[in-house]
Length: 100
Image (cartoon, rainbow, N blue to C red; front, side, top):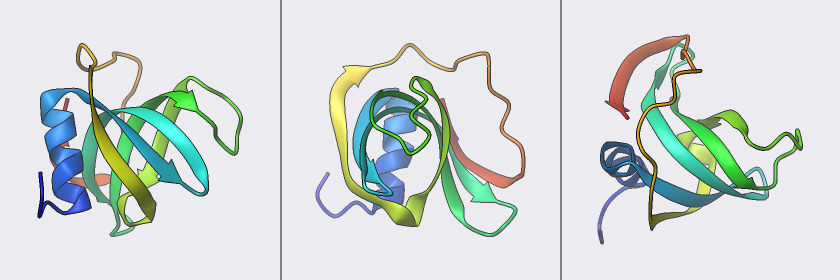
């Protein structure tokens, strides 16, 4: 929606189980956003499951922790994911803003 911040769009994507397309550290990524929260280091983060695109590690699919302020070109797609994956337990969060 027009006027939404990056964080607000991510929270909406988590709540609606919508896949996002984004750029992070120069890599185009397709991500299932699972949790948006405040990391113990004081930065807002996205915990997501990357299903497509590229990554510095080269290991796809897989879990990613992305610093929200470093996410660029964020687009919510019409594609949905079924909900939380059972193989991930986020650590180091002070506060959770949204969880799939």
